[in-house]
Structure formats: structure tokens, C-alpha cells
Image (cartoon, rainbow, N blue to C red; front, side, top):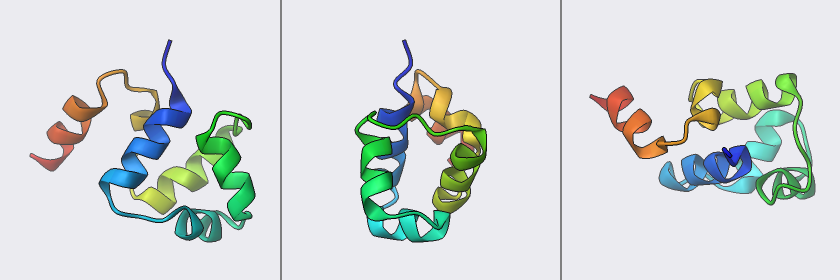
Length: 76
């Protein structure tokens, strides 16, 4: 099973972006975004797109099982 919330967190951390920044870019509270990363809230497609835009990645990266390979291919 793919843990979308964990992939979102990994991407954010790899880019050195704060939760506060992502929440603000999405027009949400920090608490809301924290719950997304912890898997307590499952964001809908619109909110996933907002998060992807804030992190400057394609939303499909959230669903990749081999996240590192995907990110490395994008950077190449």
C-alpha cells in the first residue's frame, strides 16, 4: 500500500520546506497540514493539487512507491 501522506512529508523534507509554508500556500492551517502528513486527514484531489503546487512537484509523485527513483529521474 502506498502511504501518500508519508510521500508528501518526504518530499517536503527533501526540499527543506516547512509545514507552515505549505499550509499557507494551500490556504489552510498548520494543524490541517500536520494532520495530512500524519494520515489523520485524507486530502481530496483539489487539496492534493494545492499541496503539489506548494511543493513544486507533480501530484503523481505522492503515489509513487519508489519515491527516490522518481525524484532522481526528474532531477536528471
